Structures are given as structure tokens and as C-alpha cells.
Length: 298
Image (cartoon, rainbow, N blue to C red):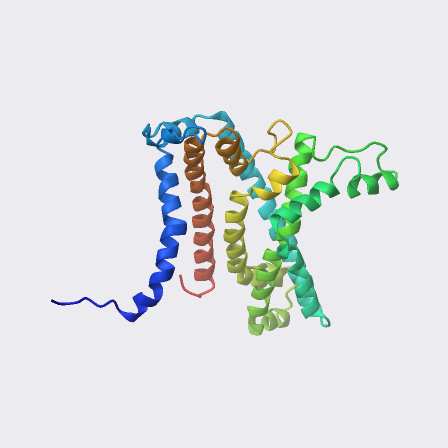
């Protein structure tokens, strides 16, 4: 009788494969299956009630889902562009520093070291109506006499969330763009200087094209983070006031754990994944185009 022996590399990977199947694949398959059922946490037996695409059809016609989708796209668009501009400016400034650059690079990474939960509590205190640092500073300077409801007013609450997101993640852009600035060859810069190009012309036609691949990498990473934003929003506003800051994943969490409609929540979750996939594919196509223009290959 022949015995089949597994190759050594497979034997070494087998424990990791088993753990991944148990921890990742099984929950994913279960959540995907439950999205086609009327599963409710209060009725465990409902997980066997197959309803087909009903949950997905409901999500695509749900006004609350599309409102949360729109706010998520708004947050993603505004936050990513602000982070890109601020990160680019910060990287350009740090690249010009001659002394203490290592210390500055380390300091730039501090905000991204904080967990989103801690950042949420931090900015919830900073923008608090009564004891918040922002209102106290504005009143002390005589700019305003009354407390500004940063987390109660719908528009100001979204601004506060965007501010927190930008503060915590601008360093992602700054670090990657700084790496791009260090990778720029000296010859084109020296040739531009000899030809009498202004600083703006050198930046526009040499520096920016070279760092664009790094910008697209940062955007791809951050688009995935922002598209599934939950912690900061949940802690700062809990989706309020009146759901004015409700994003996709806070809506999904509320639907699944508060309303106990886990099947419907999973359907919304898988639908919203297409948002992250779309932005990731878009930025990677931009990255490929930028690399091709620089002669770096596809």
C-alpha cells in the first residue's frame, strides 16, 4: 500500500492554514450564508430561513443605506484629499531640514501609533461642548461667547470627525511621500536648475510626477481604512445627531447588534465591500499609469 507523504513546505504551513480556515474562512462563509437568510440574533433558528437575494434588494432600495454610503464617500473624498495635501506639504518641509530630520520623522509617526478608539475619546473630549479644549480656547480668546456644539450640530459633527481622521492619518501620506522624495534621482533636479527652471516648475514637472506613485499607494491604503471607518465615529458621535454622521459600518453595526438583524447587516456589509474594492482598483490603476509614465514598468 502506497503512502502519500506531504511535502515539507506544506507540513510547515499546515498549522497556519488550519488556523486561517478556522478563524477567517469559516466566519466569512457563515456571514455570507447568513446574508441570504432572515437571521436575527434574537431568533437563532432563523439562520436556516433562506430568503435568497431579498436582503441585498432591500439594501439597494434602503434610503438609510444610501445616505450612509454618501456620507462615507464624502468622508473618504474630503479626508483623503486633505491628508494628501497636508502630507505632501509636511514631507516637503521635512526634506529640507538639515539637522534633526530623524527626530522629525519619528515625531510624524506618533499620531498613527494611537489606536482609533483612543483617538475617538481624545477628540470627543477636545470638541466637548462644556469642557472641551476648543471651546475653552475660543471663549478665552474672545472669538465666541457661547459654546459651539461641535458634536451636536450635524455639519460640525462631520467636520469634527474629518478633523480627527486627518490628524491621525496625515503622517501615512507624509512618510510615504518623504520616501518618494528621497528616491528622486539628482540628475533631473540639477538639469532643471541649470536650465533656469523656477521652484514651482521643478516641483510641477519633476518632483510631483516622481512622488505620484507613492501618493497613490497611500491613497489605496487609506481608502480601505476610511471606507470601513467605525471606531472614531462610534465613539465621537455614535452616528448622531439624528444619524447625520452615520457611516456604512456604524449603520451595519447598529443594524446587526442593536436591531439584531444580522442577516440584513451582513448583506449590507458585503454590498459595502464593493466601495472599498472600487477605490482600491482605481488607485492601483493610477499607480500603474504613474509608474509607466516614469518608465518603471507596469
